[in-house]
Length: 170
Figure (cartoon, rainbow, N blue to C red):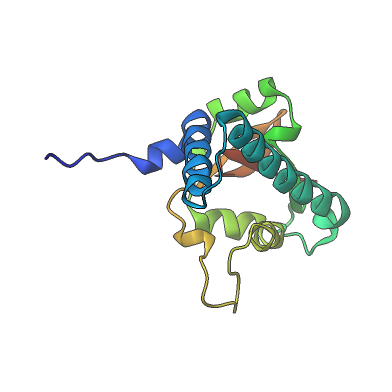
């Protein structure tokens, strides 16, 4: 029997494929527990979890993002802060941003954006700084980092769970 390989990075990078994988995983996990779950129930559960995570992040940054020791990135430049994510933006702005994006490294994003980027990592459950034992975003191979413009302003963003998290200056 021939082995069948999947490009998991491509699947996780595509929102529709990631959703499909997650829905099938929910159904299979529930079945192992003896719980019959319909596709509609699994989709609703996936959507609810994604919405709750996004709301928590946006709420946190609405309260703390701009004051949480922002980085200036370079001497003489305005501080960077969390602006929004794709769920809470309009599709045209996100499409334009993604189309103009240039890949950057984790280290570049950390150097430029600074503390707001670290705070977002903490919110997403990654180990940061002296924390040990868990996953670090830098080592999470399915997170991507980019430089672009968002609504005409320079931005850096990362993709996590098929959601773009956007940082701007000012």
